[in-house]
Structure formats: structure tokens, C-alpha cells
Image 1 (cartoon, rainbow, N blue to C red):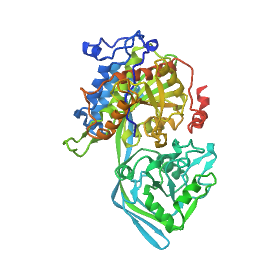
Image 2: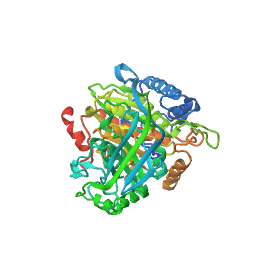
Image 3: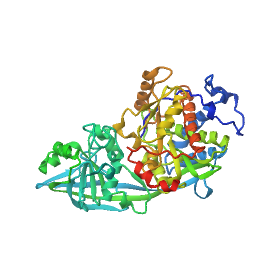
Image 4: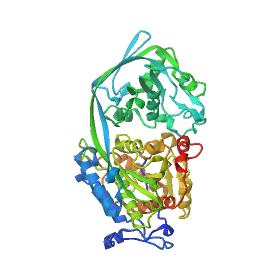
Length: 568
């Protein structure tokens, strides 16, 4: 999941613009497509608007069939990206001198309707998939899930030693089914040890399932509430009752309990009442450090369903510009190439989810960022450009890379995520998603200030968007990552125009067949200058001995610090 970007404004970066080396001359059409540079700029733009537009037009065409992983659309997509990387002057950056990193994925489906029953105080409650409960197809590798276990309320399901917080209190939870709240203990009050309203990693559903597996729970039920989840039950149902994917792991039990599910708040309230507990009272208790697990009376949870499993294979595409002095130290640029493929027809009879903004724009961006670095003076550190697969399936291409890195994460200096940039006119601001995480934000502010621009902080930190795009796979393993979003204060029309563009995209195009290339209505001027900012940030790091870190308040700082010896 990601935010829609409205645009970035023009920024003069003459000081960091390398001289062109090879690559041919622009055609008149290409030259004319470039936005006029500010008077202070002494060099042509680093990024060519016409090339960006052509990549987006091609990748979002019907010929690429919505770029679904493990489909004929993937074959066309990864071949195109590899060829464009080569033509841009990059070297193959995958394993064994290849352009590709193979990404094996486990695919799981529930066969038929799962049988889910809760028994409490002599009463049997049958739960219907998609109504009271949304059960995810098991990713543990079993062909059948069947068990019965006692129910226990575990607060927010958080174990955060650096915050002296432990909802489990050392209790033996093996074989039990936990019930937890979504988001962080601070969400309701807006103050406390977890950053107030801003969601931390501990608030994400993915963390809660992983921690449940570490605690030995047989299953985990997350109570859905719209405000702390930041989306309604329909999103939960649609996202969790269909095919599930995960990377192939040596031991999936380390991150997946037998059963992962969400339950409706109304059902949770009824369950707690039947067990002699008050839901709201226990929620308030869970917001304190003193909380201890609360057994839900004699309540038991029973599950029985078959799982159909398969293994499919997809690919990340990776190119690089090798460093001259410190080639083992890398700076990473990433964007996901995949989208939703082909589905049911919409009202217009269109069945192809073209994914022009999401994320043909990001894929085009890393191709052209690679060209800019390949044409310039050779950097001291290595630049890596990765086009990830299966982001729409749960950040799986980047997760596989992070679990099986081609370049060690401990010596990855920093990374930049490019996800769904907006092909509109420039803006005065740049939104940082998850603001407050890393020192990369300070660098960004300095670069922007040179062009009279500012950083805008994430307006919805409680939604946890920082944890919903590919950079997070590296971030949770300690690599400093920056995820910028286009600003909304447009030079043409201000925040009113920016907000209107955002709302229109979300309403009419996001994850719909209508996310198509628009030759007449789009401008790539904002993207051109946004990418110049990202180039400048990478160039500064590639010619320095500096190692940016997470801030002391970030949940990822301890992970990065643990590998400090590898960077000395």
C-alpha cells in the first residue's frame, strides 16, 4: 500500500550534475519534452522527461498484461527492464553476473469454507469467513490446519525491550490462541512510549503475527477497528480471504503461527462479554506497561480447513554501477515493477490493471536514475538499482532480497524507495513518509532548502504507511531507508490543486483498471526534478565515508547499531 504523490517542483542542481558520457544525443522531441531549467542552473537536467514518459507508456500498455508476477506479463516486464538497464550503461547486478535474482514464492489457498468455532461458557459460536472473521490461508506449509486451543487476550501483542514493554510477561503460550488489538498502545491516548499517534512497527499486523510465532502461539486473532487500522472491514476481508503468498523460507514457523486471522470488533465485544470480561476495560488496561495476559474464561477456538499449496517463481531485476574505491559499500535504489495483472472486466469492459502510476512511474525512475549515474564520473561506492517483484502480494520481492541479500545489508549505506510518483507539475514541498525515522531526512532537508523547498511531514503517521512499501523489508533489518512522497503544494494551483489530484487518483484510478498512461493530461516535469533530488542524495553518499543511521528514537536503531563493527 502506498500514498499517491501529487508532484515535485523544479530544483536547480547544477553543482551535482555530471557531464554526459555517451548514450547518444537527444532527439528534438526529447529535448523539447524537458522542462525549462531555472536561470541559475548551468547544466541540462539529469533526467530526461521523454524517456520517463516512454518507459511509463510501455510498461503500462496492454501488451504487458498488468505486470502480474509469474504470468506472461512478467516475462515481458523483466526482459524490458533488463534491456533498459543494459542500454542505460548499468552492469548486471544480480547473483553470478545475472540481471535477475530468482524469487521463489509459496502460494496458499483455503479449500472451501473454513470451519471456525468458538466455545465459551457452554455456548457455541460458529464464525463465517468474511463476516465475523477473515482467516488467512496458512503459509506454514501444511496441507491442513486443524487444532483447538484456549483463548487469551494479549493486549497489543508487543514485546519491545528498548521501551521496557512486554505484553506476554514470560507466560507459556504454546498451543494457545491469542487475541490482540491493532496499532500501538499509544493510539487511543496520543501519548506514551510508542510515539503518540504515529504508528511504530509494533502496531503493524505483520509484526503481531511474527511475534505470535516467536511466542509459540497456535494462532492469533487481531481485533479490527477502523480508526487504528486506518481502513475498514471490507479492506481486511478482501485482502485476507484470497490467495496468500510468502517467500520460500527454511523455517516458516519462525514467522507464521498455524492460524492468522482478523475478527470484527463487534464479535470481540460479544466474546469478551461471554467470557465475563469488558472489552473497553481490558483495552484501557492494555495501554499500560503493567498489563498481563488475560485468559478469556473457558473460551476455546477451533479451526479446521484444508490448504492448497504451490510454489511459483518470479524475479527481481538488479543492475549496478560499481564503485571505484569502496565497491563493497552499496547505495540502493528500489521500485516494484509488478501490478495486479488481469482481472474481471470493469464497466468499460477493461480487464487489465495497467498500473501506470503504481508503479510504472517508479520503475521508469530507477532506470533513468541508473542512466544518470552510469553517465557521470564513477562513484566511490557502488550504486545498486533493483526492480522488485510481488510488492502487491506483500512486499515479497524486496523481502526475499533482504532475507537473501546480493549485497550485504550491514554495508549497505542507505536506500531510497520510489513508489508511484505522480506525473504532474512541480510543488513547493516533499512529503516524507514516516518522518522522524532516520538521519537521511536531514540530508533531504538540506538539498531541498538549496532550491527553496521544504519537507512536509507525513499527515497520517497513525496509518503506518512507512511499513507498507518495499523499503520496509530493508528498514526492519537496519538499513537506513528514505521513502519520499510527492508534495501537494503545487506551483500551479497550490494545495487545493494537489489535494484534488490526490483525491481524484484514489477515487478513480488507484488499484483500478483506469490507472492508465495519459499522454495528454500528464506532465513529467515534477518527476524530473524529484529524481534529481534523489540523485543528489545518492551522489553525496557515494562520494563520502559517512554512514547515516536511524534516529535514537527509531525502533530500527538497535538493529543497525548491532552491525556497526562491519562498517569500521
